[in-house]
Image (cartoon, rainbow, N blue to C red; front, side, top):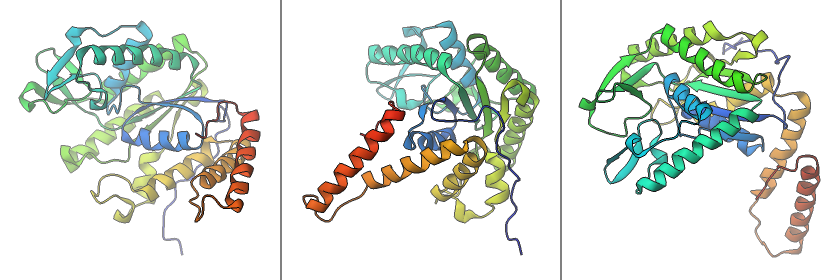
Length: 317
């Protein structure tokens, strides 16, 4: 008797991710969950240089600015609740100094440009079709920064608007990096504050729009994170206490599915070694000064250095 439905997944035949890949992730908090998995396992990974971005227009804006070297000026900044911020970026970039924020934003523009040039895989996780438009500037923002709601208009992006935005992102990046692969996915985090029906509508727009641009022959792929959560993990025990965000168990489950599709057999062997070394580094000895523990540490260091000969960018500090 089968007590779970499973989405049939096959290993990706081309452009798989290995330890020589350079990964650039944009999008919702779920992109950070997966980005953390890549980082823990020592892949060359950059995640959300402007912080969490929930919708495609915010991601397109960042990529457009980065490729065009369109730097921010003081006119792009605002001050509220004793912090300087930019409506294009997440609040984690906020600063108490206007000058520090400008420096940070523009250094991230430069870094994102370089990362776009060198990336082999760009992974974009979309969270919502709902956006907020700043009434004063008439621009769709990435983050409202807890400004008064009366300053914004809430809108639902159409399927056409989303697909046009994704096509714009693809075109921009491929003009400077023709060989890059794009991997799109939809966040399994439910935006229930928008309403349950509204969340379903939002996710359906994202899924439909993504499938209008996905084309494996052009290195444009889809991974069903949302469907795995909805169809394989159909139980609230796979959610955090807020009943909205996937639990660590669910994130691990989706990561395992991702690995079977996107990581080659050789990469999985190296990943297994990295996992073992990470577990050993996290080991807490009863007696740190014991001779046995010192032998353990020396053996661990030798194992790390042997792996670093093959992958010099590995850093276990």
